[in-house]
Image 1 (tube, rainbow, N blue to C red):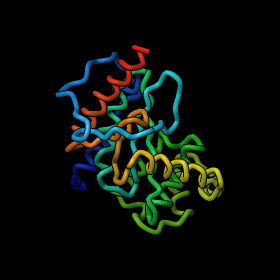
Image 2 (cartoon, rainbow, N blue to C red):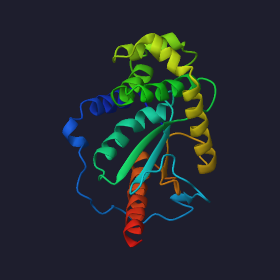
Image 3 (cartoon, rainbow, N blue to C red):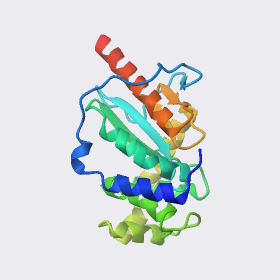
Image 4 (cartoon, rainbow, N blue to C red):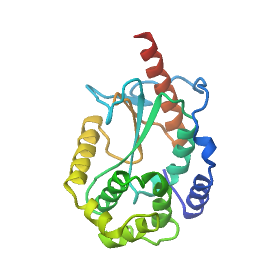
Length: 224
């Protein structure tokens, strides 16, 4: 999977321009394409568990990294996919704490989430890192990151404190544990209901497979 600056810029712009109305749940449509095959299109996770289970919901987790160019390219596609989902699907982006330059931005994501800012800053963070370069890909200071979130209503001191808090330490640990038990080793990765890790041979294929696995979980839920 490769990405170039121009496609990323175009896709991120489209994501930013999605009208709020498109985020409403759509009628359930049958998945398209061939039925995915275990071991080829997805991996069955032994004793897998959802990241944040919710009664009656089908969880789809996207493990991503803000500094990952592939994730920047995937973001508008997965955002559009999310907009088409029915109300029984919960979509959870999960910042991967893979070490090094991944950690400050993983902390930033969870801090923004805790302060209610993640929704309106998610695509903008990809843009800042991969399009306009207003944030560094490596060795950012907490103050630089907080200045970015200040443009969206965060108090810089509060944001810096949140990034360094024990609550965010716990979020990183939870994310790491989920990745280990799900076998996630790269980004972007999708895990459905804690049971299936999507493989796919392209971003579009990943989402096609996800549609089938969501439909499978929905059918299983109805048969109980």
